[in-house]
Length: 186
Image (cartoon, rainbow, N blue to C red):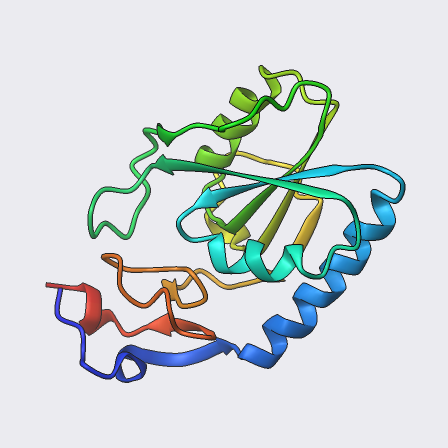
């Protein structure tokens, strides 16, 4: 992998601007606040990619909130395709039994990882569990999963920025962009 010193040079096109993301996150926060009015909500972020999204989203939700973090692996190193094998690297730090849970994802691609996580979390007896994803890439879906809150539907392109990475790089871009193939092809 060879990335430029200026990460912007590795981006072929900006798919979603910082302003577009900010507007959508505000809209999602209002919808979630209305849907869960009068209840306490537990947000579960799937590390590392969804961290910027969850941080911005939780500030737009006007409810009592708890947050928790999980880390899973379905990619290996600098892979651009999911392996389909999901490993939990960091589990929840608090029980979710009887709680309303919103699983916060950066991107839903094949659906394999999310399908595994939903089954796993349902086994912990939450009162309810829903999914909020910044990005949905339906062209690659292998498992149909209901997504309750979707920021943007995107085409089948390799995207980085706003938490999304390639080889742990590009997460700090303030937009979502399509990565130039030269940046990930050896």
